[in-house]
Image (cartoon, rainbow, N blue to C red; front, side, top):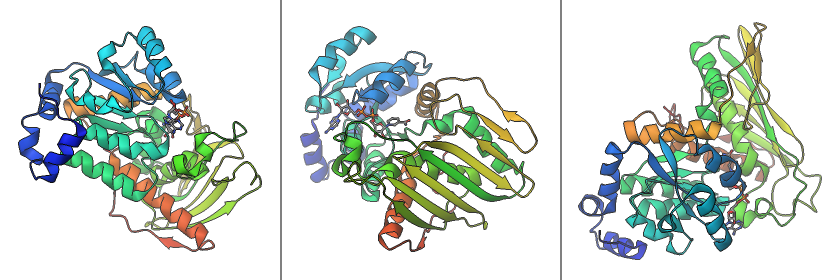
Amino acid sequence: MKHISRRNFNNLTAKGIGGAALFSSVPFACVMGANKDKKKLGIALVGLGSYSTYQLAPALQDTQHCYLAGIVTGTPEKEQIWAEKYGIPEKNIYNYQNFDDIANNEDIDVVYVVLPNSMHAEFSIRATEAGKHVICEKPMGISVAECTAIINACDKAGVKLGMGYRLHSEPYTQQVKEYVKEKTFGDILFVSADAAYRSTGNPDQWRLDRSLSGGGALMNMGVYAIQSAIYGTGENPISVAAQEFSTRPDYFKDTDETIAAQFEFPSGAVGNISTSHNFNANAMYVSGSSGWFRLQPANNYGPLSGETSRGDTIKFPHESQQKLQMDDFAKHVLFNEPNLAPGEMGKRDMMIVEAIYKSIANGGETIALDFEPGFGFGG
Ligand code: NAD
């Protein structure tokens, strides 16, 4: 099969030879067509840090509709270790420089970007240019502009895009969405959501370096609190006001330590969120006109736990959230099942993140948000 490098692809598209004509004659079409007959999609993990090592790769040993087919790493020592541990053939191992050659590899259907936040956009877009479907870790990028660029690149290449928002695939979060949709506890009036952990580790880690992380607690854990506030009400907010708190400026030199924000929703419901790298918090509480429910914990790898004003507990058998999430995305690609965490969801959350930073920069000013109803909601 003819190899089209990233540079060649860019040249072709610059000359106006991209689009349908190009897709009909190169690996894009082959990969997309092949999906129909494939039993399991091959996933390549890009970035073999702690999340790939301890969550995604183990989960991919149990998935039904996808498997760990390849790796992309900047650390040569990891190549042999992963190859032996997971039986990955040498031809499916890439580094950041030769990554674009993945276009020629029919074993790889999906590229899963698990790198520091500032690298998500580059590698997601390079994956689309190689004709691969993309799963992008949270936060989707470090700006709304990056999120838009990823979505546009996926549209242009005709590939599917999913966010690494694992909670949408797990039963406790699905129960929350069901309560809200069915009005089990009446009209939702109030939501509170906290997502935080105490960071005391290496002060040189990338999460504390704005150039790599894009921000601090808000970018890292804050997106979970934003998500909880939205699926806890079933609505996108119409405004946000926010405050930042700093108690350890020597450690958090470059990134936000603690942020609180208040939302208004179109129905009149209101919400509070908090996120921090200075304290531990992991909960959501929703109050409706005829009762309440809560999850605590609400956003870790599980098992989660919950209760309601009826006096019952919310309880489901535990399964790997990552396994469920990757199988749901594979079913979206293979069988056109709903995309539970589409790219627009990641972009919407980044729009809210930017509004929160803007509010803080303006002394807590209320910032209006103007989403189309349901924008960014998954299937
Ligand atoms: P990590 O620090 O453990 O791993 C980062 C990986 O990126 C490492 O393999 C490192 O070698 C590589 N890397 C490449 N260039 C780098 C650079 N310039 N600086 C630092 N590392 C570099 O991080 P992680 O916890 O695996 O997080 C990776 C991504 O996954 C982040 O975007 C994070 O938000 C996301 N994540 C999501 C979840 C979730 O529950 N969905 C959980 C953890 C992490």
